[in-house]
Image 1 (cartoon, rainbow, N blue to C red):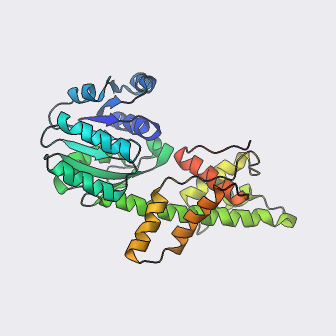
Image 2: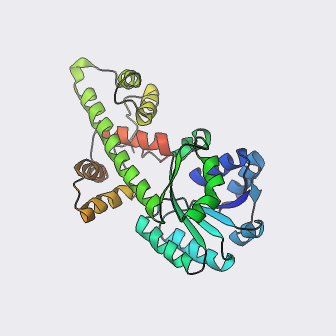
Image 3: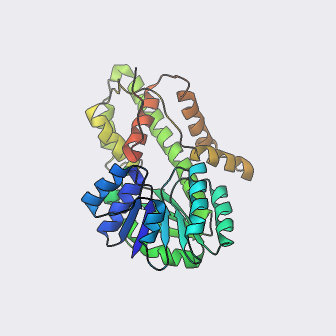
Length: 304
């Protein structure tokens, strides 16, 4: 099987490598030629000089997987792909697009008889080795066609991927996933800041997070990553208390309002990030920043 991967950054590059290692050929394209060259030499990626060139190297039913920035970049790329594809070909958006936009994209592509899959992708920079959690929205026919790719990307062929529903449902599920993630991260950050704040106890938060990883009811992958990050530096003196938000937390809060469902933890976790972006101080914000860096490779803002 052979697919095209458009966008070979932190996620797209690692996903291409995992696919190749699991027997699926990948034709890759990225705006940065060096990125293509590196993956060609290290992973046997099939290089391409343009999107058109990438598609010309696919046979039969074409599957084009995009790992691009959400919004206008993704919308434009889909529009540019339409005249290059034939009926029955498939576009997969594996980025963090808004689910409402994915529904619109699916309806538009339906008019051209081009299949569409919105795939919420979780796993960050660790997905290459551990596999990705994939939340898929598509018709049954499209999901079946892309299933071998999903099986190769997931932690095992049987686990870590799910066809959750029609087009839009994959990105919707990922949006809610990220909202929950915000809440979990915030609770860890607040708890560790409280531990650090009781100065007379001089509690070693690196040792405590390592302790909680074993037998505690709060053990989790987020805790594993946090404990690992704190081993080398629990003071975090060089980390700025600034926590960016990718947008999905905002969409989750809006969804809660639209459904009239209270989501105070998810919403408040988002509001805390907003506060950090206004030059706030606090150890908890630094904890949030190192967590984002640990699982997703997101840039940590340094002091200065």
